[in-house]
Image 1 (tube, rainbow, N blue to C red):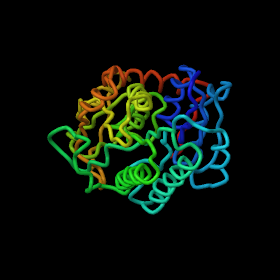
Image 2 (image 1 turned 60 degrees about the vertical axis):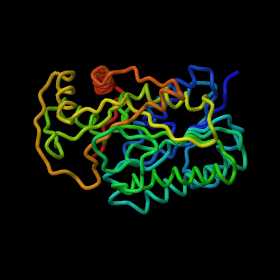
Image 3 (image 1 turned 90 degrees about the vertical axis):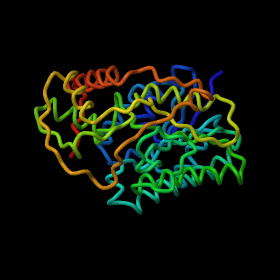
Image 4 (image 1 turned 90 degrees about the horizontal axis):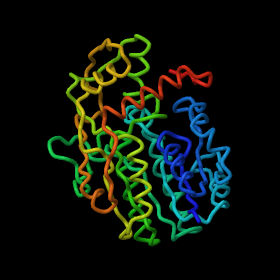
Length: 329
C-alpha cells in the first residue's frame, strides 16, 4: 500500500513533476497550492490537468498562512510525509518585495511545521531549500557544512532562515526534517521567469536576449527529473532526525555555453544584449553531491545537453498546442 504525501506548492514546476512520479509509484497525494499570479496561474492548471483525473489525488487551493485552508488540507491526513515546496521564489523580485517574501516563506513555513507537530508528528518533512543560501561563493564546490550567513538577497535569506526554523521544530517537537538545497533546476514546466525558459522563448521568436555580465557566470544546472529522484529518496533513507543535503549535478555550466546549447537545440542564433551584473545575483554555483550520493544513493542521470533538448522539445510542443498559455509580462 502506498504512502499518503502532502505536497505544498504541488501545482508548480518541481511539485507537479514530483507528483507525476509519486502517483506512478502508487502513493496518495494531497496538495496545497495558492495559484498566485507570480506567473500566469493557467500554466499551473495545465501542470495538474492529468493529476486531477487520478483517484488518489486531492488539491486544496489556498495559502499556507490561511488557517481555514490549512485545516482543510490537514483534514485529508494523517500524512506519512510532507514535501514543502510552496514559497515565493526568485532572487530579483525579492529585492522589491522583501517583507512579503519573509511573510510567506517564514510565517508560512512555521504554520506548516505547527500543523505537522499537532496532526502528524511522525511524518517526515522534506523542505525545499536553495543553493542561494551559500551566497557569493567561488572556487570549490559548496558543501553542506559551509557557512550560510552571508545571503545575497532576501529570497536567499528566507531560505536560510527556513532551514533554521526547521531545525527549531526538530529540536522542540522531535520532527523528522531534511532540508534539500536545490541547484538551478530546469526542465519541462520550468517557471517562465527563469533564464532557460525565458531565453528559449525569446530566441525561438527571434527576439533579443539580455545577458547580465560578460557571460562567464556559472550555474550548476540540474534536470528536474534528477531533483525529483533526490526528493523521493530523501523521504525513504535512514534520516538521523534533522539533515541538510545538496541536490545538484556538480557540473557548473558557463552562461554563454548555456545560450549556445539553447541555440543548438532551437536551431536559431541568439541576438545578445550585454547588461551589467544585477544586484542579488551570485557569480557561481557548484554543488558537492558526495553526501547525496552516500546517504541517498543519488546520481544525476540527465546531462545538461540532454536536459536542454528535452526542455526545448517540451517548449515547442506547448507553443504548438491548442492549450498553449501565453505568459504575461
